[in-house]
Structure formats: C-alpha cells, structure tokens
Length: 291
Image (cartoon, rainbow, N blue to C red; front, side, top):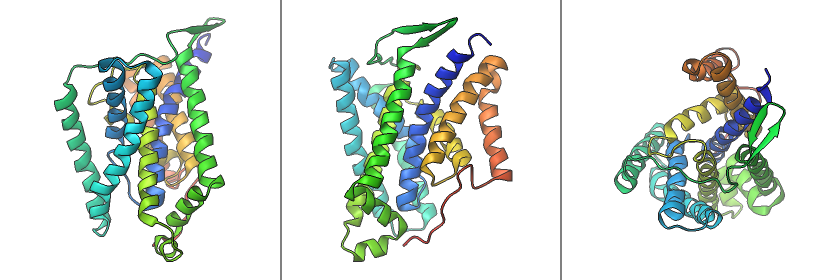
C-alpha cells in the first residue's frame, strides 16, 4: 500500500488519455448521432504526426507537438468532408461501417508510411520525477493530468461561453431547425470532427512517452475509450471524463494488486455490468429528437 499514491497518479494519467479519446467519441456522437469507430486511428495518427515533426524532422519538442496538433485538426475536418459528408444521407449503419473502413485504411496507410518499427517520442516535460515518501511520480504523469484538466476547461468554455459552442449545441439538438435559423450546419459539424481529432492528438502525444508508438497502438485505446463512454453514459461529456479516469485507475490498480493478465478483464467486466444493470451509464444521456 506504500506505493498506492504512485499507482493512483499513473492510473489517473492513463485515464486522462482514455478520457480525451472518449470526449472525441462523445463530441461526434452528440452532433451527428454517429459513433466514430476510427477514433483509435485518430490517436495513432496524432502520435505519428508527432513522430514526423519531432523525431524525423528534428523540430523542437513543443513546436513539433503543436504542428502535429494543427495537422490533426486539419485531418479531422478532412475526414468529415471525405468520409462522413458523402455518407450523411445513408443509413446510420452505413456511416458507422464507413468510419470502420476508413480507420482500417488509415492504419494500413500509416504502416506503409512509417513502417512497423515502433518509435519512442520524448516527453515535452523531460524525465524528471517527484519523490513523495516511497512513491516516485513522474513529471510527465502529473503534466498529463494537468493538461487534460486544462483541455476539459477549454472545451467547456468553448461549448458554453462562445457563439460557436452555442451554435454547435443547437445543431446537436436539431440540425434542421439550426439550418433554418441560418447557422452554417456543415461547418459546425466539421468543427466538431476537428475538435475530436485535436483531442485525439493530445491523447496520442501524451501517451506515447509512456508507451512505444506503433501503428496498432490506437486499437486498445479506442476500446478503453469506448468502455469509458459506456460507463459514464453515451453522449455525456462529464461521463466521458469520469469513465476514462475510472478505466485508467482500475487498469493500473488491477495490474498491480491482482495481475497484469486481468487488467483488461476488469475494465470490460465493469462495462458489461453497466450494460446489464445501468445501460444509461453514470450520468445517463439527455434524449432529444435530432433532425
């Protein structure tokens, strides 16, 4: 129990990554009523944009990370225009399958561009540690939690304190009514995809110094983020945050106190329990008719 604080911080850092990916799930779902199953590839691509700018182009870490984030924002809008928009009048299942197919194409394209050899991105915060009693806490883990809190605050400020955020929420409630009111619906939908891609890029850039970066890294993150949205409540931004943190902490504590063999089992067992006994999740979802 002496290292519990260290494990808790590491779990919260990993959970922050899951929460950022889950927020991308929720943003896209709330505005388009579509689950983007390519979110794992978004996280992976954000990481490999960082590999390109920082490792291969030898840019300073902060400048390379910023460039990767901007590239992902552009990619998110392009994904909306090239994948979602052409399928928008198709049945929902066709759009979902389109995101799956696009994710597979992205993953294979990344394999061709960057290869199968894993990379290791440096942390923008160095390799420093903080000693608290018997617990050794990395500066990167604390920074990951802090950046996630900052991003959540910025996201809430944008959604509830700006005209663009209010317009996005109006589109989420009723796209046809928003269009009749003169709102640029397609641009706002594209903005939601771009923001989701930016959040995924932060998740990838923050997790890559903890893990090795390879083209398959997005799949487990996407699965944990999906579990987080189920636990927190699909369509709920607070639910995505609490669900992501819960999954990350359960995973780290389970691996440490039980066995690393069962760390995934614990998270998905909790998800299944919620599906059986509380399918709306911790925070539920406000049900509204969408246009």
